[in-house]
Length: 426
Ligand code: GAL
Image 1 (cartoon, rainbow, N blue to C red):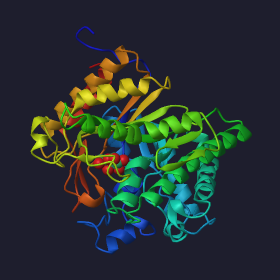
Image 2: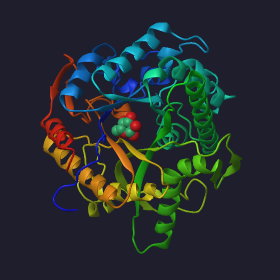
Image 3: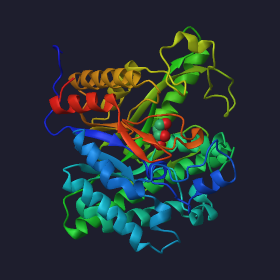
């Protein structure tokens, strides 16, 4: 590729966040209740107080040359009771979008990043009756109110991770451990995406706005069989690969959900992705556990198998840029434009973040050279924030946050990333 790869003009560069992780005080949501019940190490509290500090945070992003920013809407703020929309919250998100636009930063809006309003959960959450319609009604409202200044929408964030933690392992709300319910949640979220996709496009058409680009943020994880010579490990790793990486995208393109153990389901729409939003962090080694429905996905090898893998971040996830390249090439086969909606590292050593960013951007550049239609990269995250059950210890930010004072400090890695953006080359 020569020494440097030049990214195309107009390439989107920036960072991603989610409302619950940065805003603070999202008291009307399932996660807030979950924390109040003492189910996490540390409660989110004020988080980064970005609900108030967004202007200065975006100014920092601008000073770091970002031209795109991903954030999410907090459903529980906008619709605190079913069908009743909070004007102040809508005005707030309008200001967020206007502020980004005024800085020349493209807003990329996630409609739902994990957290749900309490009323929605009381009706059964994703597996409640007509949950997909309820979600689509919210998406429609969001498009009507905010759409004039938005092109890129992500309906939901990482449904597979959410379902896994919430319905299989029970470590996230709603704390269930039921394969059957996980299957129902999966179908509901697929349908919710389709209906939201339809609703957003309809709003734009009726209002005569330029067509939106709608997708979801898809979790991807590279899987390697734990023992390379074990046919059973290979089997479990490939089943996991299908479930974790492919199922959602395949289903949304074909209009059918095909998953062993889940009734064959027709979705309300096919081809409901205008692009692919792709999140990538790491790889897992997979060990065969048995043939039952619970076990067929295998288990992630624990140490000492991990010893053969590379460097690890603060949460012990392997740093594996080669897996990023491979996932990008795998997703390039769908022939849809790809936006990297998350990629990042938590570490207390900022030099590791510099290495991570450079290695992963080289993987992006290589994938583009090999034909992957990537049009943007969003680092996770703009600033340190609330990392779900792990609380505040993992530091993912380009910008350091002192939670006691809410003081922001730009890390050297943020400046190196800013240089890459400026040169538009790696
Ligand atoms: C993603 C998730 C984010 C963030 C990140 C780092 O899976 O979408 O909310 O927590 O991981 O763990």
